[in-house]
Amino acid sequence: MDKLLIEGGARLTGEVAISGAKNAALPILCASLLTREPLQLANVPQLNDIATMLQLLGEMGVAVSLDEIEGLRLDARGLDSPLASYEMVKTMRASILVLGPLVARCGEARVSLPGGCAIGARPVDQHIKGLQAMGAEISVEHGYIHARASRLKGARICTDMVTVTGTENLMMAATLADGETIIENAAREPEVVDLANCLIGMGARISGAGSDVIRIQGVDKLGGTAHRVMPDRIETGTFLCAAAATGGDVRLIRTSAAYLDTVIDKLMDAGCEIVSERDAIHIKAPPRLKAVSIRTAPYPAFPTDMQAQFMAINAVAEGVATLRETIFENRFMHAVELMRLGADIQIEGSNAIVRGVPRLDGAAVMATDLRASASLIIAGLVATGETLIDRIYHLDRGYERIEEKLAALGARVRRVG
Image 1 (cartoon, helix red, strand yellow):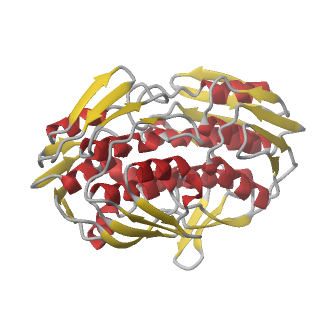
Image 2 (cartoon, rainbow, N blue to C red):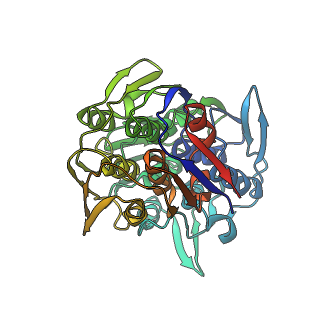
Image 3 (tube, rainbow, N blue to C red):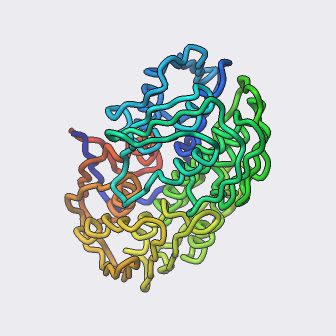
């Protein structure tokens, strides 16, 4: 099993290109199930989660081809198996995103209950309740969701909680429903907007994406389109944190600060100079950061996917910070690993109190989830000596060639067996 070996102490400098957003690409790949015409996608990152989703779509009868110039092409005219098996779904929670499109297009779907990162309960009941409101008959048997509907009907849906994948699933299903669907308490994330833009390009009638009320007027069929996936805002934030922690001077290209207001504000509070360009962000960090407290909440507030990275930078910042996690109840597992490097962290329920220390010391640590992996990399970059990170298969689910990108900025990092 691969591990990541980091020799700390290098200051990150230079320029790095940010990849397409995994969390935007995954639902957009599933949108291909809604049409018999080809979907042409650019800026799709090469990640394990993307490969898993493409394999799942292929098993359903979707033809997938990749061209270095044209990008990724998906053709679902041969869709013949509306089944997402446990073997495919167990490693990736986002597989649930095939449920809505399959019911809308095929009138039936059998989708295994999902797996994914072990960061707390993320139930799919909102997906099921929404589809039931649209007229689907749903049963859960032997670990599978079985949904049927001759044609979904437009409905007013108010989710009990803000759910990104739930909003995306129901929005895709509603594009082919009979009549108007209104999703209230909808997720406002940029990835939801990116999916909506792709669906609109396919002929869907959607308004309100990016707000908490989305309206979808169903159509009889959707066509093909060409779409470029948005840049990954969490990868962007992770590289900003890596640059900040190392006192670096880094320019990120093919990305935008438009989706990262809260993250950039906190980094500036920590003492960083940040200049936003149209398709780039330039960060220059001080020799030592100031501690900054955060509270995670649904977009546009501070993203839970950046909490671990900020725990890492606060571990070596001057002062004391409190990190409050309001989204997932089991998302402080990286704290114990950071403490192995010498971080001073105290967990009190949903709060983590981080007291900055002058230095961290390299050690062997273990990644517990995707973003925890990123926090350990940031800590390893500033630690004295070598840090060996185990279970980096989590990293490969969400960061494209991260060790190559860091090495290009001057980090001493390599993958070892």
